[in-house]
Image (tube, rainbow, N blue to C red; front, side, top):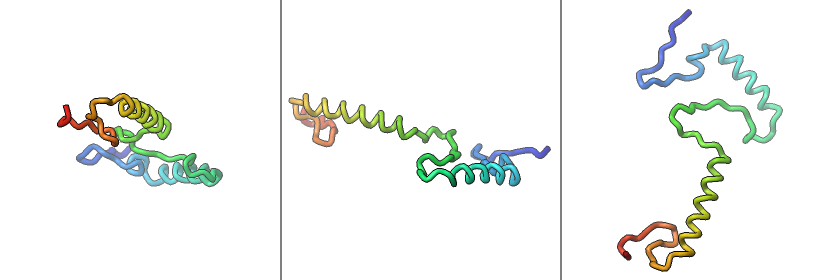
Length: 94
């Protein structure tokens, strides 16, 4: 069995890990599944989650909606004038 080595930065492509034959089989199955789905947002994909950059669309929408509500409440209750219309605080007005 061949030794699998990551790059110096610790990353590795899926193709490098699986090898050409198995990678082609996996890709063929993904392509087969995706060919029956017209909505591209529902396509099967693989992604590197190790860097922590992936956030589901649902979670992003939930956080965005919650932060919008908080910003609206802050702006509505700000009588001091320290909150600008874009939601930033102006500390010079304190």
